[in-house]
Length: 374
Image (cartoon, rainbow, N blue to C red; front, top):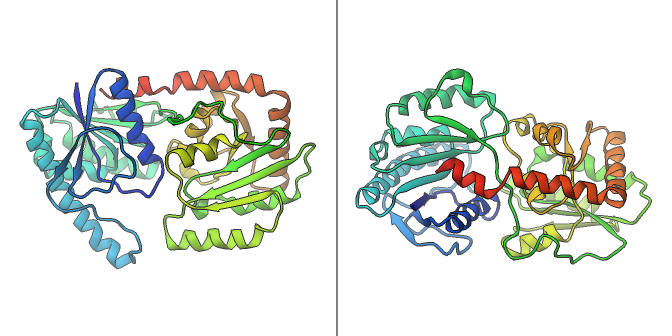
């Protein structure tokens, strides 16, 4: 099957980039022929090795460095251009260039745009993927899903560990489990770290809500039975996040066993950084992590790394698999206790955790993702 990925999100790095890679590589493995539909001049961050077809309607609009007024204006531009991109994608589908279209990262606004475009009458199936749904988003999602239900070729997929949608009786929506993010350039057992030293890593986009400082403060006070190092990498999406991260670096960079990397990591650099640690920490206490699947959690699983995670982060995973330690609260004593337990796990129960990670990788496989969408 010839499948077009309609991508319009620009990210300096991150899991949108890697999610597209999953789609391309796994579709190729299953015998499909992936291609991209993107706005003209779209700046790819990696070469996916797939044909690219440009869409008319104007370049991608970003919110980078925009104030509230500019964001409002740019959101209107985004909506207008998205309608044009969708209409051009429909024209390409009518020309026979593809057998299906996937929109890989969407919100309910995408469905609204689709309804204003010709793509609602697509001659090929259009699969729109939503990466979770919070309770405050459900009403808007259901409203748009009902409006598009009459169009038989439009299919909505929610990537989630929860089923919070079956009660509304929508026939065009299904819930699918998340995929792991696995290394592409290296084997999962590639090792670059020093023996005898346990390294815990904090990775990904840094936002204030990720509760990093209580974690850093607890780490400086924890007493471990073996040498432990903390690696903190962060890319910062907004000037406000950048300022907070720089303050943390200035405050803690003199601690001998904490290393900071304030940079975007893509491809081999990203994989090397992840594979250089023994475990990955995710002290995210924001309530939204109960509803949106944690991309870093599924990266840790795909890289076979035990985790240190908050209670809010996808509890369904931890109910099924013993893949690490959960932090009971952001109280300093609870964080220190969880850190100490993680170090003990890495020292004494590593083989047991590896078996659990293997089971999780099987459930959250790339193969199941593509089959669930297509």
